[in-house]
Length: 177
Image 1: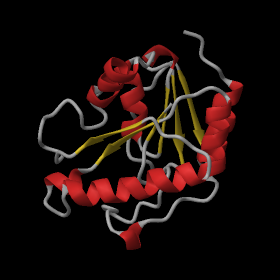
Image 2: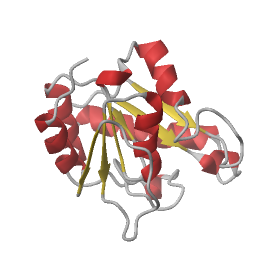
Image 3: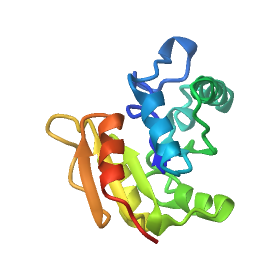
Image 4: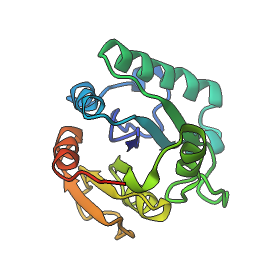
């Protein structure tokens, strides 16, 4: 299971990177425990263009991420790996979502079966990431009013109001690889 971070796991306050920006969204730990209990391995995939824009540095990202990982661990949730793209939108890299570079790294480093994987995130780019990487499914949570455009979609696609709702979708719609 590949999870977006900002707006999916933590409140998206606009480039969250400081202690005062940190707020785990309601129900996240319980929803992630359900995924782990269902046998999913969890990885975070997140665009962090604030680094490329000079708003904050890699050390700020690492500190914020360590707090999230520790908070989830205290709640009984293990995150296997975090992949992040530090580049700005115009960098032309292969890791900025919706480009599939982060998922290809996960495939190579973790042995992830992308065809049996899901992406959960709050943006059209998360859904398109799933399609471009060949994932079997994607759930878009809390879509913004008016949306942010249509995206390519994987074979199985749904929307949910929050992460708990996304887990409900995944549990009813398994993918066999």
